[in-house]
Image (cartoon, rainbow, N blue to C red; front, side, top):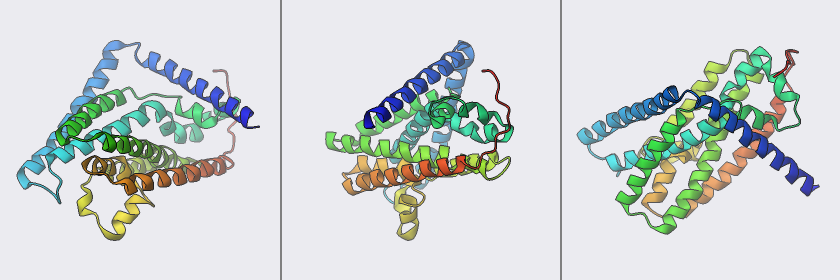
Length: 272
């Protein structure tokens, strides 16, 4: 039984990888447009970063956070956002598929529905996010002289952050499509609320609000917590992040399967 399940998972992963490859080659076929989108996103992120640095230059530090910490957290946030948007942006189209009935197509194949939807689209601008994010994060690591043990914990916290971003920014908000018509705008708004929550200095967040942002709505795990790990060894934060990520992943998958039962086929299945 376990062997069969592993075989199914491998088949799903192969389909997911090949589907993403097809989407990437299609997006990169027009090289000029491809490079322009990537470069445009880098410029956009630099402009946003410059605005934040201007704020810190004029007002100094905020509870121990300086412009250097701001650069670090922005870089980490860009990495998490870029990785997930590059590989799972198809989930953002879930409301459109449900509203228009094209969701039927994903139900006709013996492959993971989530894998099919996730790999059905690709956002090439996310490459710009990843590229700039790696540069900024690497600069902060060198600037702060981070040790090997902190880097190991940082990597584990980064994985937990990616899982939580997938749950809260990509899957859970878009499940509203099964409960309300034309919920795409609401879903995208909720996704970016979660993204923005990980960009603020953790020193200003205390008491119940900090607890909520670490557990119920764990947006601090997509940037701020990882930076705290780089600034000092916070093993308890990393372990908390792993536990919270596992809990919310199970909840998210359960909600998806339950929401899937509400879908009423529009009978628009056609050749693809």
